[in-house]
Length: 357
Image 1 (cartoon, rainbow, N blue to C red):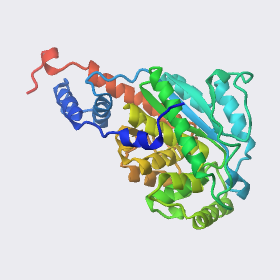
Image 2 (image 1 turned 30 degrees about the horizontal axis):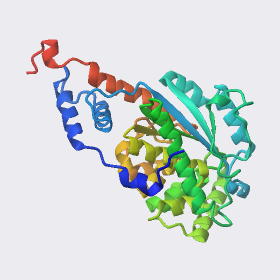
Image 3 (image 1 turned 60 degrees about the horizontal axis):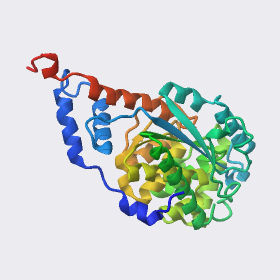
Image 4 (image 1 turned 120 degrees about the vertical axis):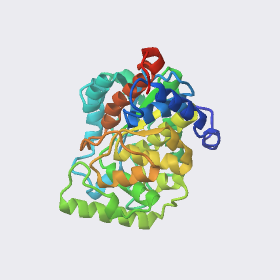
């Protein structure tokens, strides 16, 4: 685990050096194609140049970290699935048989799973695929924020620091681009609460059906979130307070991944609604993290677009996805790597012997 403190991490994060954007744009202008002919692919490559501070960026080494945790709020009837699914799905991730595994294999990314606070207990030594399971269990699930804070402030900070440490280990091992993923039954409920508090949107605007609750379930979910926010009164100017009052351990872990990307100057591709809730927590602590973020896709959850707008991010994909796990972010990694390859491998007009006109 890192010896850094959270305040030290936040103080060390620096914005992108915009001179690298300009240098990269100058090279893009020399590529043998009409000006900006590949649209946002050029923007992606240039941002990667600035993140890595080079005109030869590489995104070859990729990883997706799936943060897992359970939620006391599940007892309030806000999910269509029982809490036992969290542990069962983590076993599936480790066995290589989930959606994220298939897409990560396509993207050439490794998948690491972190138990941030599941109700189930898995032993990496005896669980198939356990070499890709890390244990940072803060507690076996949060408390229900319908009845009080989801966690203590110290636990919120511990979750963020655990995420930061896991990402740092991956970066130290050579990972150049990190994707965020999640697993936790009922986690769209704390994510909607975080989104409403930090974006200023209403709970009705932010809350969707998650894994597929019916109309009555959606109404109950909105009421639970509304009442929970009123009870706990999270402070929108204090990301740690919001995480502690209405968040989740895996959401805190994702916030730590985001902070680590900005601290170590690595690209972080956030997935959908839950991952973006984690990014919102990180952004509340340090708005500069947005310079290092890419929005993999726009989820079907109605509040996701509002979250992305608040962060100033435009999604790379919009495919009607709502699985989570990191799937949308992993799929977007292939586009980002393609953008960087264009930047580095397409000839300039001079190299091709073509007159620019």
